Amino acid sequence: MEGVNAVIPVVEVKDVTHVYVNEKGATLALDQIALSVRSGEFVSLVGPSGCGKTTLLSIIAGLIPPTEGEVSILGQPVTGPTSKIGYMLQQDFLFPWRSIRENVTIGLEIMGKLTREKKEFALHLLEELGLGQSAAKYPGELSGGMRQRAALARTLATEPDILFLDEPFSSLDFQTKLQLENLISHTLKARRKTSLLVTHDIAEAIAMSDRVIVLAPNPGRIKSEITIPAYLADMTPIAAREQDGFQEWFRIVRKEFESTERRR
Image 1: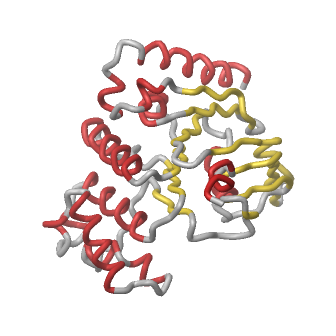
Image 2 (image 1 turned 45 degrees about the vertical axis):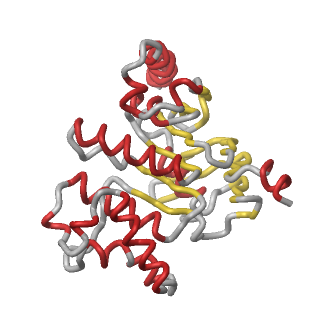
């Protein structure tokens, strides 16, 4: 049975098309998107504004149904939100009136799974992410990077199979962003988490990913898929950025990105 599961994609998107309809008419947001993500793989979605990156992520997460096409998670059709997916956003959405410890366990509370063992696991995550001594503090007492680490601990505490990251570093200063990229990359690899990242940052996508998918806009569609070589993908994001070959891969992805903007 284990061998069968190993060949089933964790995420599979089959010919997904999505149309937004409002009082002004209909807009084709996504057109015939097909992709799959393997177990433990880190995949980034990049592309200019209007290419439907976040819409695609929302459809895969079951937050909105596609107009056409199918999405499956671990071989099961997606018909709505699922606890198999953890979401980390640009904003941390920590509750200011709850301590960091209480914020990290809120997902477990909502799911009715806040057992003693789960609470201990959540506190262990805080320690692992360097926030053990901040557990009793409140969000207003933490820096932006620390708050994002707390948001990651909250997401991982529910033990999702897949982690979705929707521009989680974009509001941070460059140095904090690099440190957090390293920490998240290490944490997800150590836990063998399957991950999908939405970002405008080409260097970030290359440094963190096994594969980069470039989306073209109007309507959103897959322009190209670029596999990052193992010697870069296996490194920490900071170390990968320092390699001689990194700039060449940056040029390759940037060329694809820029060609979508020219056509636009």
